[in-house]
Length: 406
Image 1 (cartoon, rainbow, N blue to C red):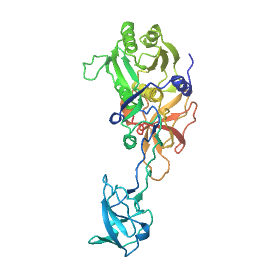
Image 2 (tube, rainbow, N blue to C red; image 1 turned 90 degrees about the horizontal axis):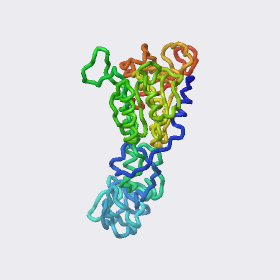
Image 3 (cartoon, one colour; image 1 turned 30 degrees about the vertical axis):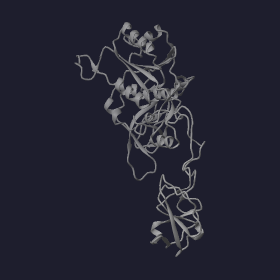
Image 4 (cartoon, rainbow, N blue to C red; image 1 turned 90 degrees about the vertical axis):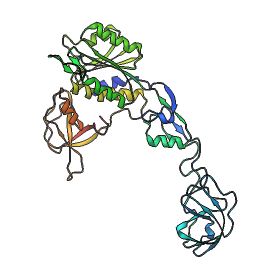
């Protein structure tokens, strides 16, 4: 099978993917969830003309400097004045309180003085001053939150103000994660002479959870078909939406995952893509379950997770921003020409107060096994196939890992 361009591979991964079903949950549990339908206001806010300051509600025609007004009552938040303000009258009013009928302006208390039950206006007020008009914030029926929104604290505040005790959200995608390889042990376990500590499964789990997914941890499967097939069957039994396998997707004698998946009925979408790192990426479907077979090298695994798993999860969640955002930057140093594969270079940001554009410096070591280098990377520099040698100042495209929380 020839190497598939990255853009074509991503298009295949998300093609025909429908958003997951909707569930309605209590408002206080919605942070980080994805809104499944638009939300409109169930009320108008404020529901009445409200004072924006402490002072006196009066008629603008009477709010002249030196005017002496009769104090006839008080309006407080939650306890409005029931009467009407007439000529040369005033009602003591507090922030958030309803403006009584007849009044059309508020003179702030700093601009007044009191003489018994008389209010002396010391600075004139104009019509409508210090009044929040009814519906200033929003009106009943207004659409304020759109489908596909990742719900944050500000959205929750708005939904609450609009009188929504619960919201419709997409069900969390269930992602089964299976690490493979006889050489792997979990952190803290005894490490054999020919073994290494598994890290990819922890990184991918964190990636899934950061994107709002629910993880089904299938552990580490040994390099034999019974162990692999048992794990695959468990993912299906527990109705995983996505199965992510890590390792075993290349061409070696011990790379068994593609065969194991095929024996279980997987329809292969593609295998091998024209990118570095991450060439041996596998994609397919097993019934309704999406399959992504990530490479075993740690950096390759994480990069492929960012580029392919994240958009897949966002599409399942119906997010409005399913694609990864990219931005422009400039090389801080020279970089060699590229070959046939699209390159994702780990790089760090360079502080430069003399330039208006962000500068990036590729890290010296780009081996796909180097976890420490990946941890220091601020971004991935995207180098198209056959890109010429880059000179300092040349413009490039980056994926900002820090901004995405990766």
